[in-house]
Picture 1 (cartoon, rainbow over the protein chains, first blue to last red):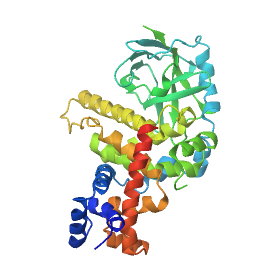
Picture 2 (cartoon, rainbow over the protein chains, first blue to last red; picture 1 turned 45 degrees about the vertical axis):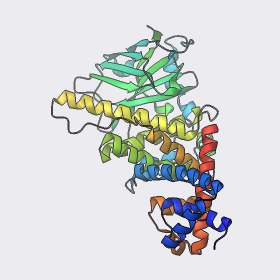
Picture 3 (cartoon, each protein chain N blue to C red; picture 1 turned 60 degrees about the vertical axis):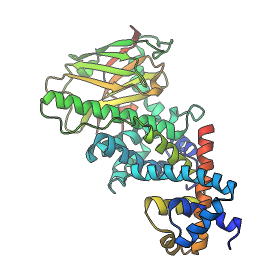
Picture 4 (tube, each protein chain N blue to C red; picture 1 turned 120 degrees about the horizontal axis):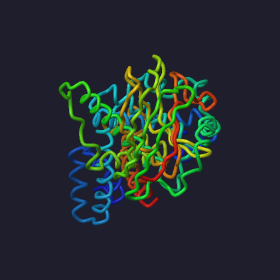
Length: 222
Length: 181
């Protein structure tokens, strides 16, 4: 006859359903008279159910995805100073006004920005409207007159303030240079008052030293 | 890097662009993000885009991560959900633009909270000892029986069984820590 401690050690495989029939019978008889082991089974079963859920959700990505995502080491090196790199676009943004300091995303608050063209896209323009929605604020972006990006280029929308910026997503435009997009405002952007759109290029990671702001604006409460 | 907390790893990424730390975070979460992408976006290519977008966002915004406000798992879950929402909207917009039939309707995004729980559990799993994590990984993700784990790890079957129990117990405690933290 197995002892309490020996049977307690089998509770994990019991919950998983991995015991031999004889062991399973012994454990079940023990559970009928041991409340602490019964409690333990309840706890282990919760962990087991969550693990099963996780295992059902996880899928093995394609093998080459990791190298595509993380890149080779020299590429990673270029990403080391995002704040320093943010300087160029933020300098461009800073001329447009003081920071919007009251915070953008208080409940029910809506903000908007007119996007002004830089010399890189002198015929372009745009509007950005921020809607407070649960769970995240949503940005409705309308742009026009933007040059069509080259084969390895794309546009990126940024929210920023002095010393930092966060990306809200990437996009491209049609031949007419127009696009209307709905993007989720990153939680990190809460309180950021400046917005900008840059022209970026694959495979380079965005670097401030090479940032090419094409549209900039300052968010104002609507 | 095994056993190093997610929050420490992302701190290393923020301070020095530590590639090994980023690689470890990828190993811990990429399968979950990719799986979520396949499920909610219904498309493997979009799921790959999702993984790319999420890790690019982690890389760029690591310096803005504040562990006092949320765990890394919660943070990366929110990024995943936001990026998935963007991808779904863009896909729907594109479908409307071309006026064709909708090829599929992506599932409701995590209406049951299952994905959120899975990120929390991935985080709890990462806090286990290597031996505990190994036995659970082999059982749940590689689908090995206790005997197969015994042979694979050259460990007596009885030890595998007691270790499985101890690992599930440690995971349950780690889940509770995460809920409190």
